[in-house]
Length: 103
Image (cartoon, rainbow, N blue to C red; front, side):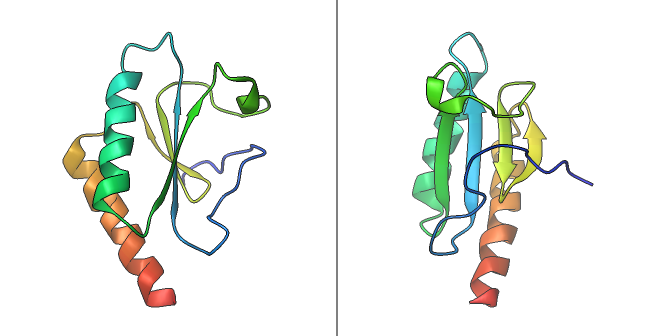
């Protein structure tokens, strides 16, 4: 079972849209790819809210993330490290589809 993120961050968008949070850091060599995937996800899934959170920023204080990049969907860690595009699109597609059915 995926770990629930213990952070002072919103676990869903205020209007109930699915939320993808991507945690990155400046020192991380793989985080530029994570930023790229986040931008693509934001453009490919218009009903998905995407936040990129830089752990080097003071606004990330108190976040319980131990590795970067970390991908969190609706408050649950779904990937440690970068997934392939196919894995990410499949997971996001299922989430967006199930979210649309619930509205």
